[in-house]
Image (cartoon, rainbow, N blue to C red; front, side, top):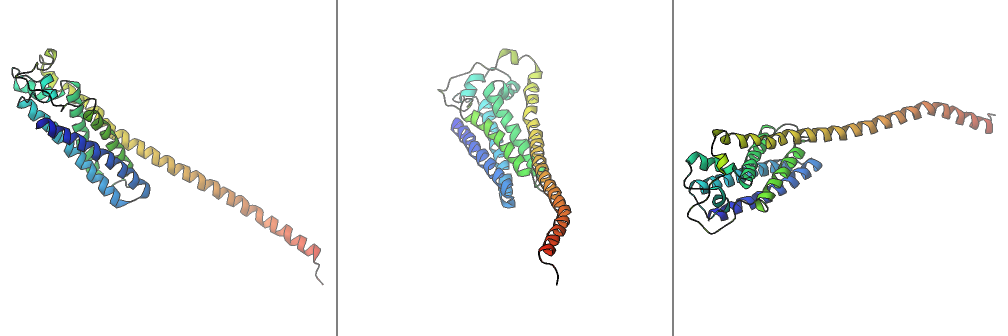
Length: 238
């Protein structure tokens, strides 16, 4: 039951992140405020799904549900409770799940804090964030799925013994979640640069047209005088 619920949440996060990213980019291109609001809702929904999936895994670890593949891989009844809790990030699959949850939280926070700001590029930022979230969810739904169902064993091996001998294990992998956090700033920066590049190109085109019109305007009086002179030459006054 726990494994099934976890898989459902991960698959739902794939759907939500991909759909939300497409809506975000479309809303930015069409300048659709209603589309932006829907993109924001998808960002919040993605965060909720990733946090729920992480909590489900913690529940499986704490209840020693060895029918869940990740718990069977890193769980054990003989280790202290704090080791069981931090076993969430003691192996690759759990670390990706944890980082996905951190990413989801920061997507939701950044989306909320900028909900009424930067209307020209926030849709593209949300789309980029959800695109990165879709990548994490895709890994968790396939090659790094921690919620596979396996035959339940009486006990598990526990996390790597080298990861149980120091309290720094509690803080080291969460610090690596800074990669997911930095992705927020990168997305904002890229969207600003893209927007400025587009605006700069438009400005250069407008300036070029203005210069052409100015040159044409300077030349036209002379051309008009030349035409008038030719008309008088062929049609002399009586």
